[in-house]
Image (cartoon, rainbow, N blue to C red; front, side, top):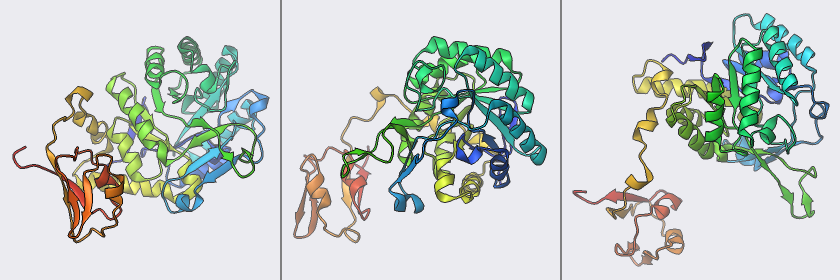
Length: 394
């Protein structure tokens, strides 16, 4: 099998799968479990001095479309899970315990969040001294609303973000990761700011803040406040930001994150420039076995193409990117219909925004003059009977 190991900011990871900061990493025992199940690294539940973040709301998690979630299809996790219940000093002991049990296995990344610059400094020094291999700055938690120096609240102010990065870097000797929020300042601007302030790696991106309403009861679902909202639907959004950041060539490795639930999702992040990935919800929903599935899937894909290492795939798709002005504007395709597959359901006829299709006695008829080559009918066909075929000579 191809070599799945990656180096990020001078730290060696045995494979690209890292368990993100979440309930799965809330103690030393939880972190050890993740490593034993095949992850190369773990990010601790966020360590903070803020007592309001140390007691969890109850209830706080809600899976939307649970049947699809268990079947590996599209779903969402809506939750208001806060930071760690452990005091920072207790977390230092948790990290030491985990490292003692793991030996040299696995990378331990301490997620930290301060309310003041002094707290950021203290947390960085404490986690560094505890034996953590890296730090991750929680500048992305969707539950922060304002007036705070942590979570997405502070990410609206690039000057404060820069100061936090510089404060932490001056207080710790280990590499520092900046986790980006898709809500706040433009993630690309955040990435530039963090890079220019000395960050060692970037995580792209965290979840969104959302609100789910129970329309029958006429009130928010389960708890009367907003929650974090993520799931497989988020992958294209996070991929977009990851590609933008990679194309900036900031000289910082990227950890892809946001909705990853299959090895194909993980591979997509690598192909657009990420060196490794973080995931959590997929493990919670589908079990720890997803870690091995992702690693095996990545290894199989690399082997099929004759790649010797995962690093050969990083950024591969970026060479196939173009610009908006260079996209094909000519109408050079025709819609082809496989009559053996077509069931004459009429969905394409009813949905075509250009009125280019009709159902005749012999099947679906395409009006080439009206067809705009948009591909909508092809992608919507429930039996895969339609395709776009390039006209001869074009």
